Image (cartoon, rainbow, N blue to C red):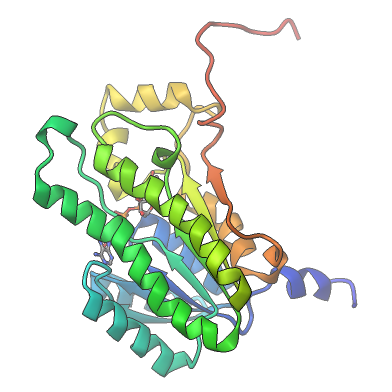
Amino acid sequence: MENGTYLKSVFGLEGKTVLVTGAAGGIGAAISEGLAYAGAEVAVCGRTLAKCEALAEKIQSGGAKASAHFLDVADMASIQSCVDAVMARYGKIDVLFNVAGINKREGMLDVEEATYDRIMDTNLKGVYFMTQAVAREMYKRKNGSIVNIGSHNDAAMLGGCSVYGAAKSGVIALTRSMAVECARYGIRCNGISPGHIMTELTKVSWDSPNRAPYMRERIAMERGGQPEELVGMAILLASDASSYMTGQTYHIDGGCLCGGTPWEYDTKY
Ligand SMILES: NC(=O)c1ccc[n+]([C@@H]2O[C@H](COP(=O)([O-])OP(=O)(O)OC[C@H]3O[C@@H](n4cnc5c(N)ncnc54)[C@H](O)[C@@H]3O)[C@@H](O)[C@H]2O)c1
């Protein structure tokens, strides 16, 4: 293989069709754009169709390939019609990114059943049945990569996020069971767990005079992440460079899970 073509053949996404859920959100948009500019054709899917259309147009005007599709992952009929629409357009789905997710921050003693159901239906049940619908298509070609977005909250629990934490922990468990079940069909399943990333979902926390310093103090790099900082791992897991990787979840968190520094120190150098 010639110099220059090697990297592209390993990491390049030319010819791959990627379906991204929650694609118009902060992380979904960064991943959709990143994968499209790495060569994939991206089906930008989400509940807010107008935002998905705007993102698809932006990607197209940047010279890459994308289309917008309505999807509500909490609605079984919507899941199937979205997958059908993407299949009708591209004839295959090589990669699925389950990005759609919601949260409501409140104490465990106050959570009502409707809130519990809404978060679980979107963050866990949605991932399960979206994956099932796409994996049935991948199965026919014995090839595919599925990437689930977990959270810092699947490993380190935060007060006031009990339902979200349980759902995201479930997503990581599901990633491992999917990996075990689907390996025989040529389908790999991995997770990306973002730390504190600056998007609409976390704006309320980054804008808060109490919460922002709490988070910054606990992140080794002392800052929130940008959605674009997840794109490298997204390309790796979508590409053939990860052909022997399955069942793992990768935390991208600026060192938030490593620990922290409770005392002051400096260096003489
Ligand atoms: N921002 C962070 O710090 C952070 C950290 C860890 C994990 N995450 C996870 O990353 C993912 C993306 O979060 P984000 O920060 O980009 O948030 P965001 O609010 O910007 O984006 C979430 C997207 O999901 C879509 N969505 C919600 N419910 C949906 C449904 N039923 N069907 C289809 N789409 C739906 C929303 O419309 C939105 O576009 C979520 O799963 C979130 O839990 C985010």
